[in-house]
Amino acid sequence: MQREDVIGARVSGCYRLCMTTPDFCDRELDLHRLDLRYADLRLADPRALERLRQSLERYGQREPCLAVALAGSPQLVLLDGYRRVAALRRLGRDTVRVEAHAVDLTAGLVLALTRAQGRAWAAIEEAWWLRELTAVQGLSQQEVARHCGRDVSWVSRRLTLLDGLSEPLSQALRAGTLSLWSATRALIPLARANADHAGRLLEALRAHPLATRTLRAWFARYRQARVRERERLVDHPRLFEGALAVRAQERIETLLRDGPEGACLHDMQMLEAILARLGKRLAALSGEPWPEGLRRTLLRLTETLVREAHTLARYSPHDHPRDAHRDPHSEGPRGESAADRPGP
Image (cartoon, rainbow, N blue to C red; front, side, top):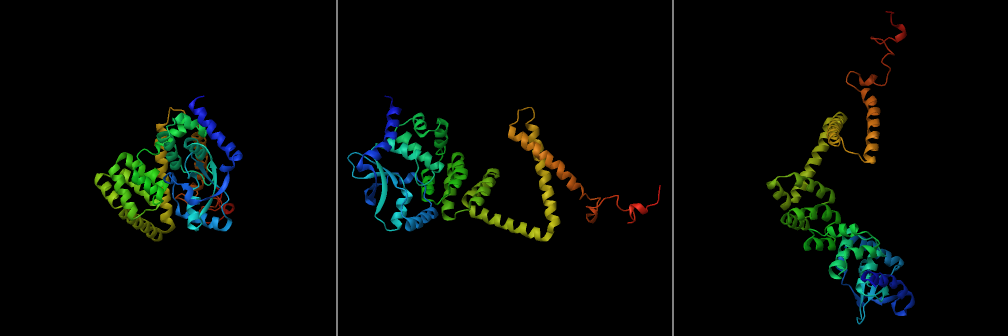
């Protein structure tokens, strides 16, 4: 029997063992008997932990944690349920419901990855788990993909998330002091390009965290900035946050000063710029086959522009706004009705 078939048999056998072996069923277990060696492979979320604590206090533990019992060890290795264990400890409980399986670690890790009980896995958690299976347990990406019911490209994409993920970044993610979006969309790409800047930014964010929206704007500015400005952005991200707040206040004051006329002017200028940019991008795509979604969207946009062009024409400068909804032929040049006009 090939190696991957052996592992598959072990994983599928987990369910039969739980049903046929009394010592490895759903049961209450003292917390001190759990081996929490994989706690660093799951993300911390203080708010979610508090919600779970309240739920456990009111309704009790409904779903058991998943663990494996290794031969010769008095402890059970916890695979899934770390947040439940933390919540139970907050409540002062000393026991936990555990579904234990008499399999080796490799089969147990695969089982945990394919059958998450408590909550959905974050992409970075799946990446950590896959690295444990490949780098530590020695499985190939093909073997992992087969037993997880995925293709090899999914395994490869998840493992790619760890490229540029330094240990300080990993610790900040696990502790919940850095959001997953901030890490995957800003810090990790920055670390791949400039590890020194990523480390300095992480230190600055630990002292003064930025909201996700602010960090998104910061990263967009960093990509366009020159060398000197990048140094200031990395060392003093709070100054950038202050500049954003000043700019937002200036926009509010501008709206108050210019009124709806200024808002209309701003919208028209933005629309004109967007249409000009879109025209250049469409010209660059000429001669190449377009995706069906792009073709349908362009058709809808064309119809919308034609329809709105008639609406905008009513408000053109040669028409007085007061007469915009009137028939231009309903009155004579001096206000008399068309029926009272003299003949030609």
